[in-house]
Structure formats: C-alpha cells, structure tokens
Image (cartoon, rainbow, N blue to C red; front, side, top):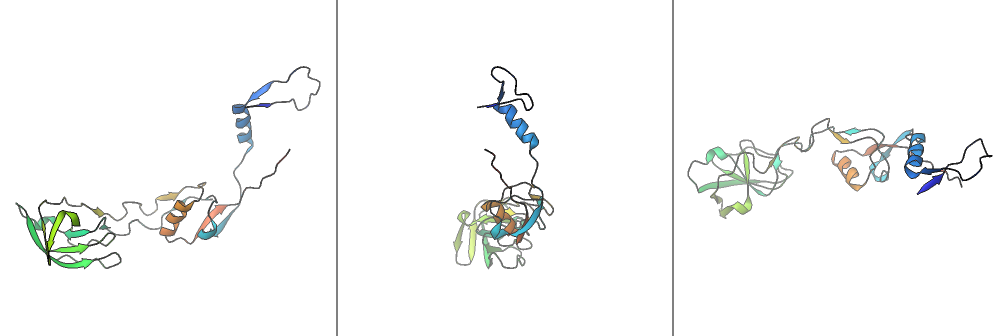
Length: 197
C-alpha cells in the first residue's frame, strides 16, 4: 500500500508526484501520535477494554501461605525410615480455608488442594500414590521434601509488577486484579477519534 505525498505549499509541480511507502507514512503517523492524557478510577465491572494508566504492583504475596498443590496426604519425610513401604496413621483432614495446625510426629493428614501446609509437614504425596485402609495410609515410594507444595510468594512477591501501564484490560487481567482484592483500577481516558475525509 502506498500513500500519495503532495507538496504542501507548491501546487505548480508538473508531472506525477512521488509516492511514499506504507512504512514511511506509518512512521510519520506514529511520530505525530502521543499517549492519551488524563486518567480515571473505575470499578472492575466497568473496566473491560480500558487501558491501565499506571503499573499495578501486588500488595500481597501469592500464594499468601504455603499450600497444597493437589489432593493428597501431608507428611514429614523425616518420619520415613529406610526401607519402605511405610504405613502411617491418618489423624485428620485439612481443606482449603481451614487453619493449618500442626502435624503429629509419625502421622499423616489428609489435605485438599489449596489447604495450608501444617507445621511439621514437608511434602504432600498424591492420593493416587498411596493405598488407604481405614485410618491408615501406605506408601511405597519416598516423597521428595517440598513435593506438591506451593510456597508463599512463589507466583508473585509483594511489590511485584502484576500489570504494566498501557495494558488493555480483558477478563484475564481483571481476574488477576480481583484475586488481589482490588475493586477499582486506574485507567486512561478513552481515545477521542475524528475522521477527516
């Protein structure tokens, strides 16, 4: 695509006028453009399609605390002497939203995805990797310390940039802001468009 370039002040030029390439015309247009000035704070429910005016940094760490990455059993790997298999009593259950509590020595706790890791536990073994009989579980493979545990701040540290300035806000971005507990977001003023024909 080419755009015809006509001299601004000289209408006496004879013959065909030179053509400007699309890249040159685009570069000129972009050089004349400037960011929209002025911003406003909007509720998240009204911010879809708008553009962030400032960077947004996280006021919290995500996750907020060490938690289980899956359904399984929290245990301390130090309580598994060689060799296996190992049978442990299951002494309780922790679901997402519960307080973490502490793990009794030599026992296991049933733990669900997102639940806080109890004090004393250093691994979560997948429920598929154990056999359960009544209130006991048996495992044949020693879990690695830290396995299936999402550490506090692993996804995002406090002060980490969540969204840069100039980011268009779609469902994903608004979902992240909502997960941070934000009800409002600062956005740029909408662009005013004029057509010259």
